[in-house]
Each structure stands twice: as structure tokens, then as C-alpha cells.
Amino acid sequence: MSQSGKLYLVPTPIGNLEDITLRALRVLKEADIILAEDTRTSAPMLKHFGISQKVYAHHQHNEHQSTNEVVRFLKEGKQVALISDAGTPSISDPGFFLVREALKHDIAIECLPGATAFVPALVNSGFPTDRFCFEGFLPVKKGRQTRYKALAEEERTMVFYESPHRIPKTLEEMITYFGADRQISVSRELTKLFEETVRGTVAEVKAYYETHPVKGEFVICVAGMESQKSKGKNYKEEE
Image (cartoon, rainbow, N blue to C red; front, top):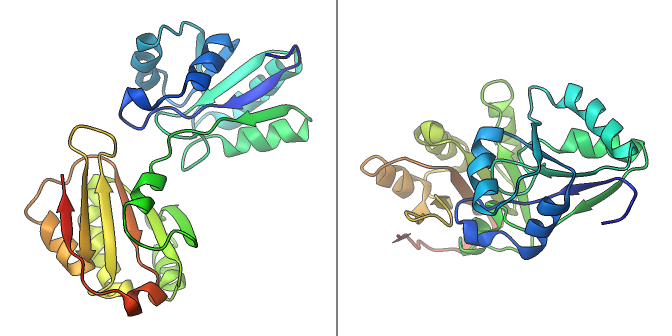
């Protein structure tokens, strides 16, 4: 690594540890400091790969305070690697605020390519991938209906993240705002042992999860309005 400080954004596996890159391992082993969204979550992964660098917590509840300290480290010439619990930092995870502040201080930033949950979910959905919009997590309460209404006539493929306990409610809402016949693809536990993708209309997928386990982290891909017009039913479950 160079002598000047640099901030590295390092993707980590979303489930299968084999998905980490050789480059990511090198950067983590050479970093002076590792910032982790949850040190308890990251500890097993770091231990597995023999990474013993100092690890500090950097999450949504302390990122403003933590960022000031991190910027100071970087200005001192330290090499800092940021990881999230899983996937690429700043994608529905902490990272954006730190990157913005580092740029304000003319600090070099390097983002490594790697695991991100929405990419495999989008690619295996069967929906158009040339144009899509990533929505991440919808607002839990305030602004949720407004967001749905704004997306009701979206022509691009839409990608959402969702927690398991909200899946029944979210699918019911999608029937209301997108229509029961809108085609969707729901992936869960990506790269893990019980990875599953269920495809069909919103109504069909909702019915499926009324009789099957709703566990793990979910990625929902929704066909855009234009795709819906020309796409017939294609209900398929994969395990």
C-alpha cells in the first residue's frame, strides 16, 4: 500500500465465505485499521481468514462521531478498511457519510468489487437488467405509501431489500400498489445452504409464503410496467 492514507471499501461475503476475493483478503491483512458495522458479526469471518488487525465499530448509530476519528487516522497516513456485516459497504449499509467526509478532506478512496446481494437476485430474476432501479429498504412507516405511489408506473425493473418479518405485509402492499398480477422474483438466503428464489405474480408468491418458511434476508425484484405488459406467467420455485 502507499505511504499516504487511503480509505478502502471492502465487500465481504453475503453468506458463502468462498465469495471473498484474494484482493479483499490482502487489503484487510495490510490495513492498519478495520472498521466493521458490527464487530461481533465480523469477528468469525476475520478469524477464519487469519486477519488480526484492530477492529473498530462503525455503524449508523455512531458513524458521525466515528467519522471524525477515522478522518484523523487517514490524515496521519493510516490505511483504513471499511466492511459491513455482509456485502458492499454503503449499499443499504454504513459508508456513504464516511466516503463523503473523506472526499471533503481530499483523502484517497478505493472501492473493491465484490459481493452485493441485489446483483445475483436481479440477474436470476429473468427481468430486464439493462435498465433497473435499486430502492433498497422502503421506509418503514413515514413515506412508505408515497414511495409505492411514485413507483407504481415505473417502467424499469425494481429491486428492494426486505426483512423477513415484513415480507407478508410488503407483498400485500405490492398487490395494492402494483397489482396482484405484477410479476416478481423473491430471493432469500443468497449464496447460503437454503438459498431459494420464488417467481410468479405477487399474488402467487404471497400465497407461497403463507405456507412456507419466511426466514433469512430477502431481495425482491419487481417487473417494470412495460415488462409486465409483455410477460406472461412464469411461476417457478428453485431450491
